[in-house]
Image (cartoon, rainbow, N blue to C red; front, side):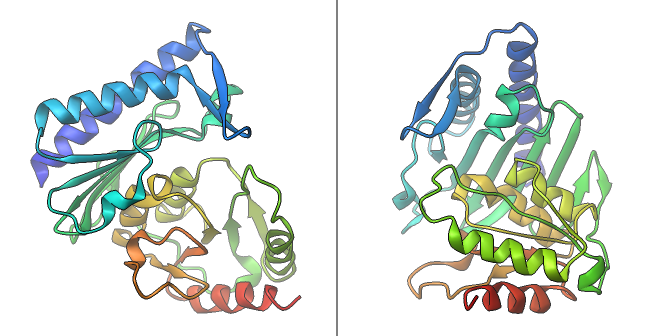
Length: 267
């Protein structure tokens, strides 16, 4: 597993150097997929770099990437190791010159997420975890905050590009702002969750895509977070891969936040 981690952190750093260089050189073009989701040429080039390097090193492994293979059926009946890749999480931030963007790479072995790496090249922060071995930031151990009081808790979330079903999200924001200290919306789910793992946030909730949270989920759990959902997980889906109504916080806050978010459905 340490060999996998060394390979992945090197790969994430190389992909990070690429996207920093492309933006520094003002060499960014973009398009929209599904009419509302931004994709840049940097996403595609970083995706090519990551996929090619994995395929060369581990030719028998499967790769699930946001930009080149967004097929969730890959996680069912796995017969080989699976890499889950988001070449740039926080593309809108990236395209607008913000620093909250990162490369996210997870490895699934024996149907379990066993390694996660999230790297922000703009702040030089490398978050990583191996299952059962704790989580680190630039090699130093990290742990979730110990806040128990909802009224003092800082909660992170995000919002979808598709605004057709915005009303339930507004209700959740209402209950969180009413009962918690504040909300943060930083624009990268993977980094939001890693910030929670490092004690910079107290809770996080959102519906995502698997590549947004696979690596960060493990990092948060290994840092002591409780990971789950505030709605029922379908019985035929492994909770670690279920992407709707995700909730992550320290164990003290988790049941309180879950209750709040469930109450929002009745507003």
